[in-house]
Image (cartoon, rainbow, N blue to C red; front, side, top):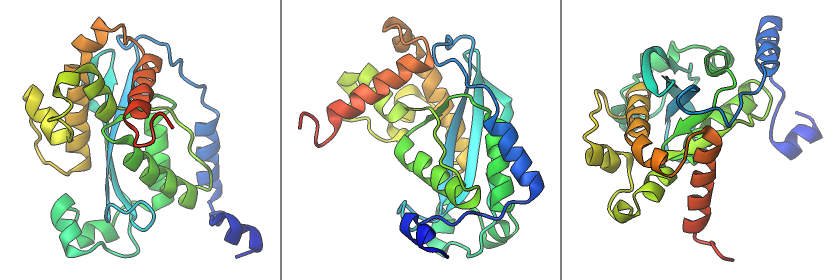
Length: 238
C-alpha cells in the first residue's frame, strides 16, 4: 500500500479486463433527464442488508431493487443479489435479514455483484427510505471493489412522506409506520427485495399528494427531499 492509498484510504482494485469493460460500458451510458415526468420514467427503488448499522465498520451483504415504470411497479424488473463475504456476519445479524452463513460465503463475488447492480440500474434515478444508509453502504462497496466514486441521483421517501403529510410527521417516522398508515404489507420484512417492494408501494401511495403539489418529476422529488432534510436538520438555520 503506497502513501497515496494510505492518505485516501482506498486501494485500487485489480479488475479483470471483462470487469473493466463492463464498468466502462456503464459509465458511458447517457444520463437520464431528471425532469422526465413520473408517468413516463423508470425509477429504481432500492434497499440493502448489511452486517450492522455502523456505516464505517459494517459491510454490504445484499441489495434488493425493483423498478417503477410509468407509475407502476414492475415485478418482472427486479434484482436481488447477495455479495460474497470473506467473513460471515454474526448470528444476531443473520436473525434480522435471514441471509445465512452458507448463502453469504457462496454469494456473488463483490465486483461482479456490484456490476450486476449498476447494469440493472442503468442511469435511472434511485429511490429509498433513509437514503443516507443505503447510499453510503453501496457507495462504499463500489469504491472498494470497483475503484470509483458513485455519484448518482437519489430521493428519500423518509423526507418526502412527512413533507407531504406534515400532520402525520410526529407519529410516522419509520418505514413500518408509513406502511401501516397506507395499509402496505411486506412478505419478508428485512429482506432487501421485500423492503424495496414496500418502499415502492409507499412511493405510489404518496403520488396523489405529490400530484397536488406538482411534484411530477425526479427533480421535483429531489427538491422536496432536500428542502425537508435541510429544514429538519439539527443544524438547520446555522
